[in-house]
Amino acid sequence: MSRTSSAPRVVRNRRGTPSRFLAVVALVLSAVLAGPDPTAHAAVGLTRVDGFGADPGQLTMYVHRPASLPAKPAVVIALHGCTQDAQGYADHSGLPRLADRYGFLLVLAETTTSNNPNKCFNWFGTTDNRRGQGEAASIRQMAAHTVSAFGADPGRIHVTGLSAGGAMTAVMLATYPDVFRAGAVVAGLPYDCTKDTGPYLCMNPGTDRTPAQWAQRVRDAHPSWSGPWPRVAVWHGEKDTTVVPRNADELRDQWTAVHGLSQTPSRTSVIGPNSTRREEYLAADGSVAVEVNRVPGIGHGTPVDPGSGTEQCGSTGAAYFLDSICSSYWISRFFGLAGSDSPPGSLPAPTGLTTTGATDTAIGLRWNPVDGATGYVVHRDGAPVATPGTTSYTDTGLSPGSSHAYTVAARDADGGTGTPSGPVTARTTGATAVCRTATNHAHVQAGRATTSGGYTYATGSQQNMGLYNVFVTHTLKESPTGYFTVADGACP
Image (cartoon, rainbow, N blue to C red; front, side, top):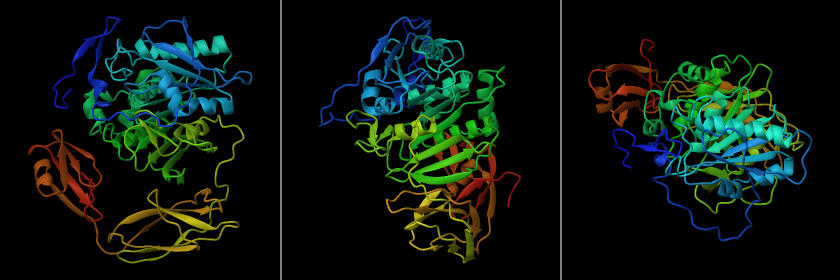
């Protein structure tokens, strides 16, 4: 289907209700299917569960039950992406291996081409993404059946999924906060993104709403709910052009606002063999309410890391499973299912991080040494920038008048990164912010903004400025040079 289609094509599923097939053809159209895995491996054993209860969404339920389970085990419900199925998701995601290791029940929901021509969960349709309706109600019934039939713990039910399954994960967290303790959205989208726009625009270039607006959509999904909200982990490839990384930011905005938290991370770190950037947002009790994991170097798919190590899992022998980091391992840890596994890099946070000076293009830092450290990792604005072997570092090549937040973490002899320090913010000397007020058309012509799909986006920050025309006017602040943010009524 062309991305320029003016409206989604409506098809009829076997339930006789309309379902928009637009969704998520776009999740698969531009991808090329991966070749077969050169190393043969046995399929994961799944048991189909018939008669699990009311099934208005006409889904199929499968269970992977480890040979050894504790009393009242935890549950993870997994939702595949477009063109996938439950067996393939089990075979390649690494989740069954972790279920066997940590002793939790793995439930896989599966949709069909009768529901959606591309086997996508219908995250975008009000007949399936509302409490008590369609696919959302079917998945909720699977959770209830797992408790009644398998003796699972109703207080430890979790959900995760990829792409359309990731978007459906957000649906389940919003519509059933009384059921799900936590969720992990992989390459997905914020809940009810299509309330006032089309699925294509949600996926690319993404839809910009305020944190308060996003949070209200979640609260509206279950207006009477007054209990705790689920914890949420977001995973997204930094080179994803199908569901663009802006959606990770909007998911962060949605769920931090639901939890009443700032959109500035409480702490940042790097994890895994590829230095995935992790941002954590802490609740008042110090627990992680929301985290965002930005995976470098990959596009649209589930990050996996084939191998036999503790932090490795998964297989790349199918489309949308990308060799990078074992996201399923880290998701299991976020869910609190990893038992006694100690976190990699057990060194404490360095103390005394301070600036030693600044020029127009450089900022100096120093900190106190950590016993047992063989080196350190310096992060600027959440991204690793250096691995010095001493307790000082000068960050160079910066723009005049630019402000940056720094943290530092110790590294052990195995390369594990310890707890990051508290942040320090510093600013280079020189240029001050410059403000310009003009129409969206003029901003684009001057290079201060770009246009895509009829909308205007500020260069650098990529904030949505509205329609590309001569009737919409905004003030843009330039700081540092070449980076623009919307500053209507608040500039400089």
